[in-house]
Image (cartoon, rainbow, N blue to C red):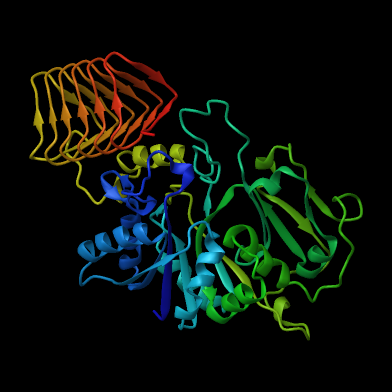
Length: 453
């Protein structure tokens, strides 16, 4: 398939502090004991998409990511790792490597996406429709949209969910309207002229932008060149393309809230689920060739909607990190790449378990780790070469590599990074512990972020 693929791998995201560091950039953050970016790369390989540019923010992060990819995917993928300036946004990252894009179409995918939706299916839909852009839309996870970035332990008062409002044609192939993120908290307006142009529009609030897009290369490069201030694909580039595909429709004013005159409003505090099947209808029927029927050159914006049985989540917050680890060793275990035992867990043969130690279902223990007597591990991931004493309880947690946990410690709902030491009887609940930190004897921490200064 004649596609170049761009994987936007980020750098050391502040949203994931203290989990990420100069030694462990976001792309290498372990998910079920595998680097996060490996899920995207394996997915691309399965779709026979092997010409890949991985864009990493920061020189050192790019070096680390490049070294890992070179060893893990030698002779499997053709990968070029490119370092770009930090904090330039997704559109800025694309702009920085724009001259490297030469194929007719380009697949752009977020490096933090964990999904079983094949990118090849999105690419095929894009080609079939002759689209300027095709976006993957997935159903919002039960735990909430991954754009709703909370901090896990620190933010018990949940903020309102940040959703997408999308407008689709009656065939659910064309993207006619999109409002994302914080803008949803405002009045969302669909102009009467737009509805007149398309004939019928279905307004949906149960779908999220998965950050996987197929672009026509020249269209993408034109937008990046003309809109030099654009930083975000999701918030700026995609909405711009959606708006401009209907620019030949009769112009209106600034728009009004939907009322008896025919405009449609999505109130910010309404029950958005009720809108999932709402349709705004104008007298004329929708025609697929409408967007190219005028004298002004236009383009098509399309969607590929994944089935409800597909898994789709982005690792863009600490809460999302915990959710994905839980899912990949639980209901989405097919994504892990491992074979689970008859007890529905994975214990590496090199692990050593003490007397009366139990490892429950939906757990993973990596090679070289040792647990003392009377330990209990439930719904947790334990990394490589950890040393765990006796009478230790670990529940709903992620423990990374080379962690030392002394006798009597209790860890619940927490993430413990590489080379951490928990001294005797330390207690963690809903905490994140940065790499190399020492949790002192008998200390009790709840909903804290602990990191070396």
